[in-house]
Amino acid sequence: MLRLLFPVTFLCSSVHATEPARPNVLFIAVDDLRPELACYGRQHIHSPNIDGLADSGVLFERAYCMVPTCGASRASLMTGLRPSRKRFVTYLTSAEKDAPGITTLNTHFRNNDYRTISLGKVFHHKEDNAVGWSEPAWRPPQNRSYLLPENHRLHQEGQKLKKKKRGPAWESADVPDNAYADGLLAERAIAELRTLKDRDQPFFMAVGFLKPHLPFIAPRKYWKLYDHDQIELPDNYHVPRDAPDESIHNSGELRSYAGIPASGPISNEAARNLIHGYYACVSYTDAQIGRLLAELDQLELTKNTIVVLWGDHGWNLGEHTLWCKHSCYETSMQIPLIVRAPGIQGGQRRSGLVESIDLYPTLCELSGLKSPDHLQGRSFAGLMKNSQAEWKTAAVGRFQNGDTIRTEGFRFTEYSDAAGTQTSAMLYDHAADPAENVNVLKSRQQVVDEVTKQLHRIKVSDRN
Image 1: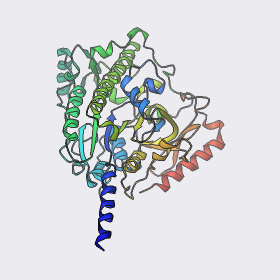
Image 2: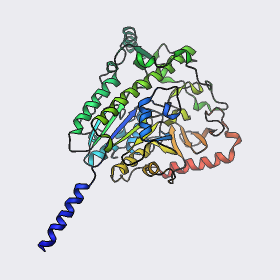
Image 3: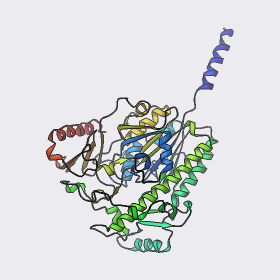
Image 4: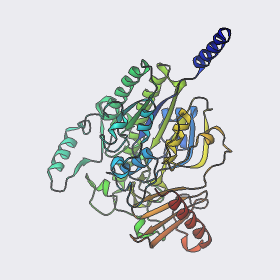
């Protein structure tokens, strides 16, 4: 018997020694980032660091949020649950209040012996799901917004009004990156990585960058990357033909900023300033992401770290007269999504229709964790490894009284009242009209019937 014990013990020890460590997760969220990036074919955007991540990871060409407003979108993604008329509705949504008892993504990783860190804007509310973080969530100081004295004064005066008004919608100051919040956030994240490297524990570090969310504030050097005179308004700076009234809003979020009229059209020059500011903020955030990824390399953590970059929803830059998000159009629903994982070849692209609730089960699979039973998304890890893998045929989302479905060739949206009765609808043919300028609902009845059934089937099957 003794002669048998030694070989068996040696074998067990050898297996344990070669067992790979669980991968770390660097979970990068970017507020209001639409897929207007060079790696998505928008060559006018200066985004070299995100482009570099795409070159080493898998880029999803058609990824979609669940709700085009920040609180609800983030709560849906972090719980892995679909939204409904009564769940994940507004920008103020709390995951804990709307989905009590549900194990969120960060909590699941903490329960599986990961050190979980929240820096910047991850959930909409910093205190949301505090139990899921190994230490209190951290955000940059709130005073890192307007730095130009006149803009700061306008903001302070606006806050004293009965109907509070913010400062200007944009600012370009000749300051270093860390004068504004996202530069400080990058510095804090880098310091945290250095600490985490020395821990004998895998980490799940979420870093939520604040720009390009309004106001469009970035150091002047990022504004200088773009020629203001070359910036043009979108070709479809008009309401789509035959679009339902319910599909168009007044861009209320933007109207709260100084210098923006409370209603009516925005001047062409103001529109150019907004577009210019958005571009500058994208490049500013891209630079901070580059600093973070460079530190990951410097610390030799890259080989065993999953990196995810995602936007919480799209954003409108004047398309269909819309600014901000808050609609069921493609520009509000589509998000950038890039995932780099150990052992999966980089520089690949996937055209499958992906929903943000798919991230939770995907990260579980890539990390070797069992997925909780409540998840309504589907892991796309197999799709990352094999472009021919079987995958879903639709992405479904909603906003307020509108439910929307994106299929291979169409986007269909159904608006309904509290009783569930349809009040209006719209259908866009993406093969003929990718900018969604003509509602073809009345001329494509067979398609309408098919996508309506598919939309209702997904809504019912995933009800929780």
